[in-house]
Image (cartoon, helix red, strand yellow):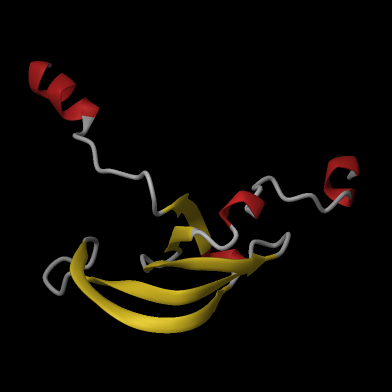
Length: 102
């Protein structure tokens, strides 16, 4: 119980405050916005939030359609990933080449 008693979050979001973040939520929703605040339970306040809507034909994929949400609170219990919006880029899957060789 010693490690839990400090209430220190394993994630340091301080460096993302007032910067753009992309958040993946349980259930498949993805939201990006400007991180305005957070707590040790990973509840986050995002301003100018935009939700990336799912592809109607394949609900596991995100489409290019978005909807503006404005100021939102993301409950920490449903936050799966948090990443900066600047400096992320899609790369080719390094495992597909290996599978083709096998």
